[in-house]
Length: 133
Image (tube, rainbow, N blue to C red):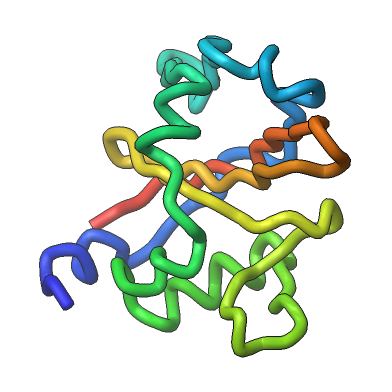
């Protein structure tokens, strides 16, 4: 494990709660641009194609980038649940879809993303965490 990654996430401050970003057919999700206000003076932008093809990582991999204490604090803060069976190692929300995340600057974005029904995809911003060293 890279010590710099662990040190990067010593504490966090939750910035937002759940926000629905997309609910529709997959073809309409291509190249949608999202602008997320993280504070009064800061907007983070990304495209759905960035998230779907590159930026989004399975939430379980976040455990490798921080201490267990911080990882489980995030789970507790947002009330995420362990999928059954636990051996799958993925966490879910009320949507029963896997969580994904990506980091931009010093913000950690956590999303629910996936196919809710045949051809119906949802993208929900579960929360933003501002990470401090």
